[in-house]
Length: 250
Image 1 (cartoon, rainbow, N blue to C red):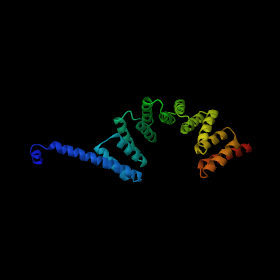
Image 2: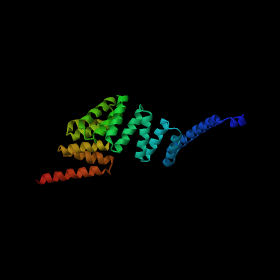
Image 3: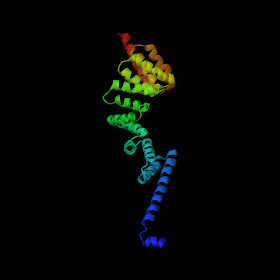
Image 4: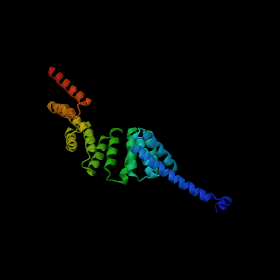
């Protein structure tokens, strides 16, 4: 049979064998990449995943490659891979959110918002999609009110979403809504008492409102106890003391 097949066009069996070999090679490369990534051998993992998707650009391996690029700090390559993944699986919410995060890092806020809106359209209960949309708003033309709306929607979906409370507090304070900002910061600190950014912002608000003792407590007794090397706390504390000294001279 082997001789007859070779004489009368044995291309099909050879093609089948080649397909089986490529499938086997793909599986080997994919799982070698996973093992390498787990062992923190990122350059080798990336090579494995790149060669694997050259054989089969299935979504899981594209996501693995994108994640490896992100871990390696190769954001441009991650963006290209995620764009490819989203084109291949347009209803993949996690891919859209990952793409939005990369766009934020690249300061491409229009593309970030586009990815977020697609994710929200697919799932109106996605708190991370609302959060990322708001995060983009705070950078893109400073759309504070829209950011508040998006963050409120994120919190409605997840009442323990401390990142959303913290970002909303920052936006509210930019709008000089001290009371509402403080309320959100208290929520963050009830969930995570050692959250440095929340403690710092709370201290800044106290200082701006002239509540020197409260600010002093936040900077000295809380932030610096959590992290004695927090430079912002020292700078804010110093600025506050200088302002207080200058005001007493006047």
